Image 1 (cartoon, rainbow over the protein chains, first blue to last red):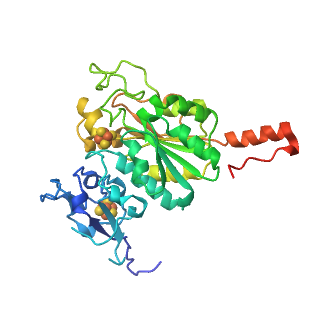
Image 2: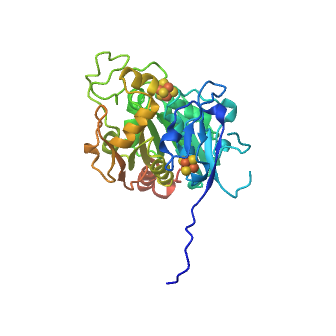
Length: 83
Length: 285
Ligand code: SF4
Ligand code: SF4
């Protein structure tokens, strides 16, 4: 045992969204475990409200949003990955 | 937010065919993500993986995946897949279709492929209706649910697909829902590695045709129902997993056993009868 403070490492992710693929089902918004997403007020070119990352720093790169998206419009990458 | 990166499963999709035809809030696309993830995680040999669909909304899956894909006639995915497998036993054959296609029109094929233990994985997206053809009753439409051909609510008894598959001899039987994305992807990856007739049922929303008539809200409402009403019971007796209208859904892996496949049995039988004269069948050369 030491007195040193322990830093808890948490995976961090960056969310990628292809706005114009979205059809507004909101599965990603509902099932993001850290509630990082919300539907935007903007319309995409199909007339739907795509999600946006309202708490981008909260993303843990779990990629559940990718798994749930029926339109192949959202996913995350580990922070540190090349753009 | 825009991005310059490519979507992680895009290389497995025929992007020239996008956007797909599925309605907003439909669950079929979710199952495709799970399938793609399972292909990635199991490091499946994509050159040897073939996918066969029948007709229907789920029947479109074969056409959207960048594998050797076959879009067959209504109900005939399984006999087509049987032919593929017997002609070229090296292939990993996956049948991906809906409840109407696989268990009504194709019900007979389903029963006999399971009985014969033909080596294939059958994935059935069960949304309780014929989507593409207009919301008719299928063998899985729950009692009392309204369909375009059951305006006063269905009064028919239903098929419980895991029980059907189990009793016909399937060696692997599981049920998940489109809410259970991680479990489903794991289950598919596991099923890829097994031999024999394997069956996965996926309960999935159809907001446009099933839910609208039954006043069940949108795709998200159904996803919340799937989340709240599912209970995981691995190894559950398949006689006890029947579904009721908006009732509890037992999910999990119900059956996992090893049995010789139809080809194993054929080779063994001919060897027994013909002795060394018989050269083991390994596909059409
Ligand atoms: S990767 Fe996970 S934590 Fe990040 S936005 Fe998607 S669902 Fe939320
Ligand atoms: S009709 Fe139903 S099953 Fe077909 S794409 Fe629309 S929501 Fe999906």
